Length: 113
Image (cartoon, rainbow, N blue to C red; front, side, top):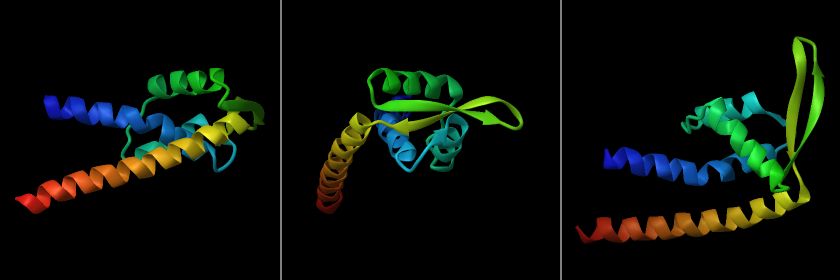
C-alpha cells in the first residue's frame, strides 16, 4: 500500500511537466495527450487531464484554438503561451537536477551494499 501511494504521488508530481512537454511540440488535442501519456506508462484518464489543462490555461501557460472536425463537433487544440514556454524551460532544468540527484543518491546506496 505504501509503495503504491508513493508511486501515485511521484507520477502526479511530474504530470504537468509531461503535459507541457507534449504540448510544446505543437498544437495538441487532449486525446492525443492521453494517448501519449498512456504509451509512456503514465496512465491518465480524462477526469484527470481536463482539470489540469484548465488549471494550466488559467495560469496563463496554455491557450487553445477551436478547430472544426469532419467527424463531429469542433475540437480544442492546445498550445503553449510564451509564459508556458518559460515555465517549461524552468521545469526542464529542475527535472535534470532531480534526475542527477536521484541517480546520485540511489547509486551511492547501491554501491554501499
